[in-house]
Length: 288
Image (cartoon, rainbow, N blue to C red; front, side, top):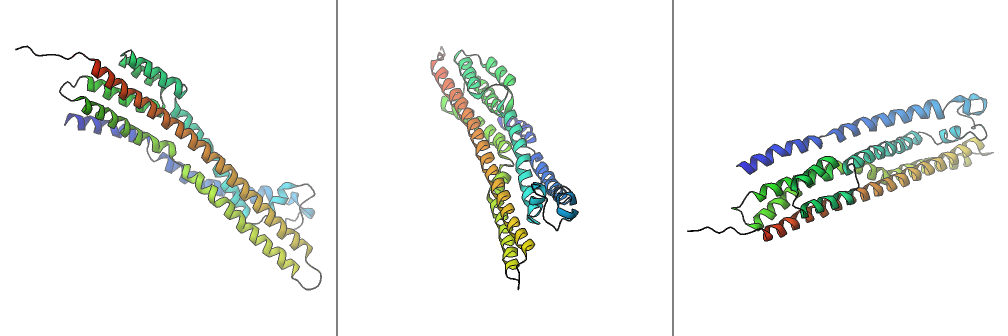
């Protein structure tokens, strides 16, 4: 009963860290990005000063890229919102993963823990986790505390002690990793749909261009130019957003893999050191 109580009292603290703050953040950022993008499209890109005769229906002024992007049509604010979301969520993930890594590099932290364990300095290893901070240090500290607890359990077999330490590390890892992976699904989704949304704008622009060519008599030059501009601008924005999202997703995934590898390495060091020291411990014999 004591062990179940200890686990139950510890899990809520970790779950509090992995609270639905990421979901709240996403529910705020997504509509806010859409609103900001619509405002940028209407009042910045669609500013009459960007067009000939101060008329947004006319051609953009020569070299005025704001007016050129405005000609992309109503798909442009959607693509701007997707690009803005990738930028915001990338910053949020970068800050979260940097905090999860801790104050020092993972490699030096793992070496420090291994060195202290080899010296049988469990308290020093726990102090190193407190100094390191972050998700990796939290997992390692949970394993070290269980390590210290198992040293005072002479009635358990070695295999049971090792299994208890390993289970503690796995449970702590399963509670920490979701916090690192939160919102990455949004970035990966944007990487998939940004190009498709741009393609929709491209198709709509080409429809307008061919409609301008199909008119009787002289083709509508303004309609043709606007249709082609809409097609090309939406294609460019869609590809740009998708490319940035793919790069961001792969970058953060590699960083999470690095943290996971550090946790696995530290966990293996804890378990192997405990097993070695358990075998080296002197066996107490009872005298009759």
